[in-house]
Image (cartoon, rainbow, N blue to C red; front, side, top):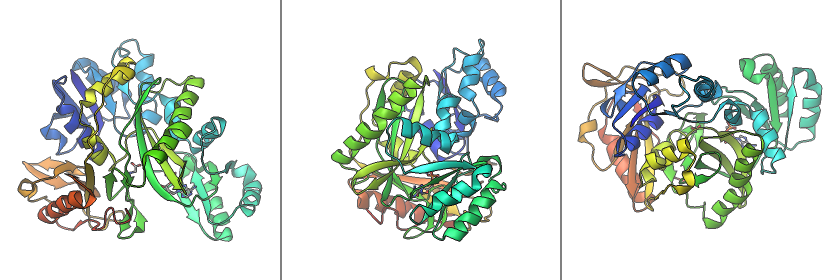
Length: 422
Ligand code: AMP
Ligand code: GLY
């Protein structure tokens, strides 16, 4: 089989690494990929937003399956494009159709979906500019802090948590006046949930599902979860407080009603679902849905799948996931992100990365890298994810941190306290 993976980050390197291990797979194409994926397959310069060019490439290169890494092409309807075209319909796409992708693409849609399906989530109301006064009135009835969410995709920046009422009103006004462009035309105002966050992932063919290992990511740039939000500075799996009782609650209260809700709405969901959860005194609530794997969560979740990932992906494509086997490693996996100094603010790219060949005991997943004259050069804020297995958290972290010291590039920064709260 030939597989085309769309995306260019650490998540896509991890997917490529795992898919390349399958004896079912002959060739992997990654579009556009990075310096890490170039070693596992062939990077191709395709724009994932141009569905026709993706489809023509797939057709011309005997691609048997497309795995979509990031959310944007899914929210844009790449899967629908394949289904609607006779010429391309036979090529399965792993990733939901547009209506399914709205679980991530529209917070308003996701909240409505959860309410209708009895899925625990923070109390909320949605507002548009015309209802500014009612939005303020609603906030006055709520406890602090106020949570304001732009409805649409806002590159992870569309959620504001504000302590002061007057400031919240001001921000709401800014959102309606275009602070997040079209994404902020509708704003979800919701109750603040106090608890510990974690993420649970499933893969589904629309009928059945398999629960993948859970993970916790570290989003703030600074130690002890301080400073600006990033795309993720590290992750761990498993998450010790996600015990059997808690995960059973997640399955019964959240996963099952999500699958049956999608079916009821006539959405044939094929792909990953990422449940961003808050553990509030032992009870799980959904903070957000994502319609893809997380990044850097993929860098710890995928390595824990011991069996062939293609089994699961084919189960999704063929609608027989129930028959497929999955084995999960009981070991702990952690990842530590090496980022460019200054990230998530301004930072420099184009730095040569040294000593990757001197590391041992970890898997180096590349994120923002490219190849130039045989050298690996940084090309983004998040540069490398150093993933390690261990008998426990401490053991795994020791390996990642040893290699984080060995690898070098100008401006290298990483958090030294991944897993500090576990
Ligand atoms: P989202 O983009 O919806 O994941 O929100 C970004 C982050 O904001 C989440 O990862 C949480 O840390 C936080 N957050 C979002 N909604 C809430 C809420 N209702 N209560 C507490 N924290 C929240
Ligand atoms: N690590 C968070 C995300 O992938 O959205």
